[in-house]
Image (cartoon, rainbow, N blue to C red; front, side, top):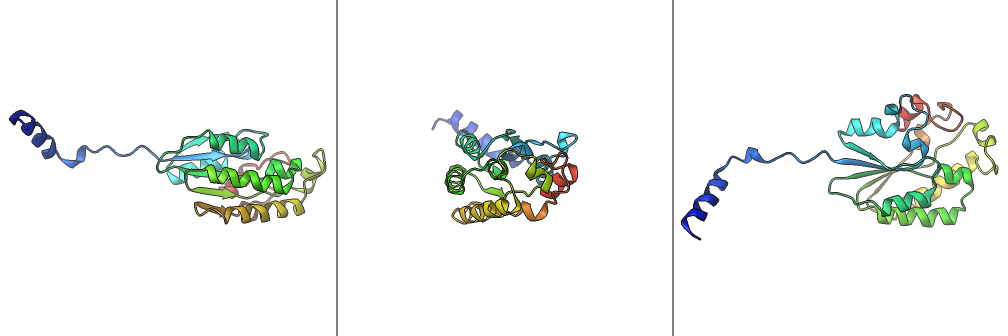
Length: 193
């Protein structure tokens, strides 16, 4: 090493450590349907994922899309590049419960989605609806019994993945706190958060 290079390296090593830049804010990456997107919250900044990101001091990357089912969530997860420090939130099962997705198909898709998450996951289970919300849907698939069956599947699949923490949103959420029979209102979003 020549003298000039030695002096440059020595000068760099002598700099105070305070020049280290703080890491960028860690992301909260959200997947799901219209509830996660923020339907029912007014303003949308009151939706549960925005409340959660603010509480955790994380930037929100909300990849939820209204009207989607578990295969679309899995595709979004598989298309996501996760960074160190990311945390995933996935509220799942609602449209699949309402739309009559067969439980074995739902379980297989959920398992694939969780396996593709290269970050810790807080997995929220399926929410209940008020009775009028169930009867207001085509197909007649939705019911408290169907929600309970979905939530058994969600718990079983979550238990297979060490990076997944199951969050019992169903127990925390009162379906009377709805904006339109389907989506949580501000109070409902706060309960989920």
